[in-house]
Length: 318
Ligand code: UDP
Ligand code: MG
Image (cartoon, rainbow, N blue to C red; front, side, top):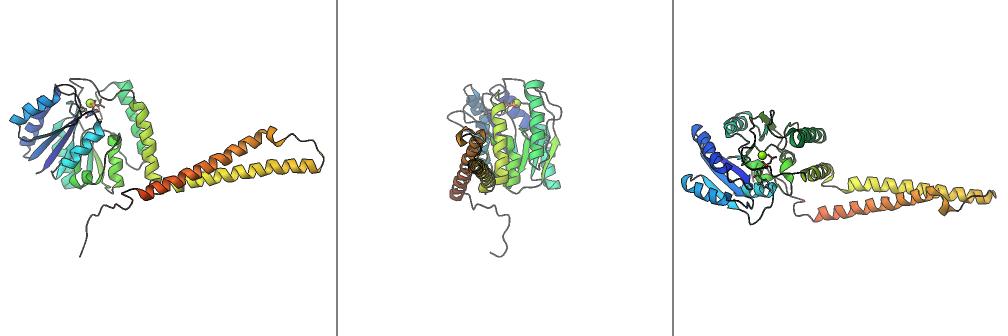
């Protein structure tokens, strides 16, 4: 089979029929054999009934329904596990992504050797203040922090070589960072294609204000994992040691000053009334906390099941 099209959806009953026939038309027109994987992420509307009805007419449809809403990442993860096509495409279910972009994206993978091609909604039809601007800022930050030069990291429309999605594990809210995950897994050739974007025709967006809190937190943890995931001690240890040493030196300095003053009979206040004493103390305590955090983090990574999981590309003469 050429293509697996993975579509996570949550309460998109109105869009699914149009989307299904649109995809079918594009795939047939371009001579692709394909499977259409709908992952119903615990929809509360009639999405599942709609999919069931459509699957009678379209034999390409395979579908999975979650017991409850787990989030887009979870839906993608399950879809990726199921996918059997040589190339895998992900798309949003809300008709904002245009299936007609898919053939060109697949061509880029096949002929130009890309591992992953991400859509770029250059002209975007979403609310400017709540979506477009924050997204620009977010993409700019990710570009600066990671070496992946994409303009639209979190575009729902993406195409992958099969090995990519079989090597990565999307969890939590990591669907926002799939290109970063792919890069970690060793897939370097990541490209983008400008795609047409439509306004949401039915239903409402499923990502509200909470993404302003979760997005940045996830970004921090992605950056941290990129840099120190395998050796957390390299981060905490340096900080911890530095703070402890500074604190220790400051405490000694405060103490020696007091002793010198005593020796020369100069009146000096009690050490405990000296503000520097408390700053020095805090620094020492924080330093040892950092150090311990690093140590414990190191023990955790030591025990993680995939500490020695390497994706092997080829083996010769085994
Ligand atoms: N989605 C999902 N589970 C969720 C939230 C969203 O499967 O918990 C799906 C949703 O149905 C859509 C896609 O993820 O197919 C993108 O969501 P949406 O269009 O609401 O995001 P936006 O385009 O507004 O960023
Ligand atoms: Mg959308």
